[in-house]
Figure: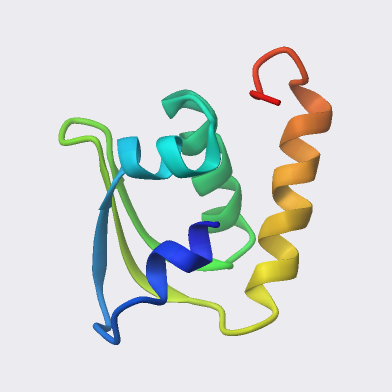
Length: 87
């Protein structure tokens, strides 16, 4: 789902409100931040999470294979925090 938020435009850089990601993924803001931090740490994306403005600025995303890796990361987060992730 996160990749779908990035693909609609061809812009190289993209700022996305964390609330939009939370709404579309049905995760809390905290869980969205966790998934984003994990994605940043394994170099699936490059960017900056701005907690003050509640946005993530994505300057680069791994093409194609990114979808499978993000899905795996999401499953990992769900497994680690089943009581925090919305069904």
